[in-house]
Image 1 (cartoon, rainbow, N blue to C red):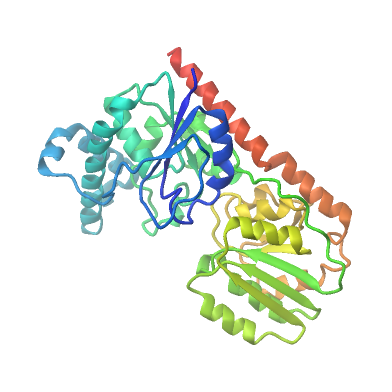
Image 2 (cartoon, rainbow, N blue to C red):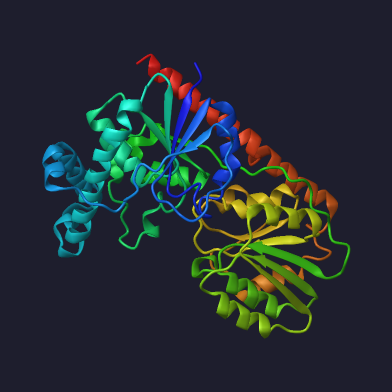
Length: 413
């Protein structure tokens, strides 16, 4: 019997978010007879999908709140959420600061749960369907509530960054974490750092945590530049936590010829442009702005790059931009954040401290040409490490093997 995968996302395939799913979906579609994608939110435009992938908006009004009747019919779910919040936030549950926000959150979850029970549950065949939440976040909470009253419902989830690290939330808390952990069959962490965080923070459930890295497709090899001018590339949103302006400041302090190409835009673009305009004559810059992934991959195929730089202050998993650059054999310079360490070592490049100064980064860039990473052998080693650990075909097939293995085991319970 062909298995069917139900994939719960935030927006994908709408808009530009969750771009890393574009690498994973082809393997999911190849390994399952049908894939149903359930985005929590919509968005402008829909990306191209494999023929056996269908999209269904279960919640056209994702922020609707439960009626009084729905609250009465779901008193058990209300109790479970309150118990979980007590585990998550303790006495703060009763503070004025939390009360309104949590009440709104609980009513929203009850509304969404009622929709799932009516629209989804009748179609669920536990012998045939594998349920996979791409984030351990809102969908994971809803699936946990569903499982509490319908124990035949089993699900797995991934954990990336904001759905994993409490410090990435202004409140310092991930609501309903206790509820999610009790119900989920497995949480697949995309980085070793994420796995370690869960093991330390929530040791009671450590048997449910596994490492399952993401991966990127093979688009070939980037040619080593043949000029004295250092060719630097970067790719990220231009937002405060990505610190693209730090890279710009560092480039402004270099003493050797440099050309920098950056893909991405965001609210700090005006500040970035001002820094670029003040660059010394030996530094040239090409700000490409937002671009689709296919266009960026073509650029790597056609334009030699010496080094890829990531200066992020706050990563979740292993930045996909680093994986993509490594797949081309491009040496890496990156700050120590989130799961970045998983790809940074003496075979791939230089791991900077979490908070490097512009002068420190400038010294590293000035020393690249003629250094130990500036040769074809090192570049071959970068690509080899990517092939061993982050090649999409291998990582996602291993993940699918694990999903199907778990599902087969559940049938014997």
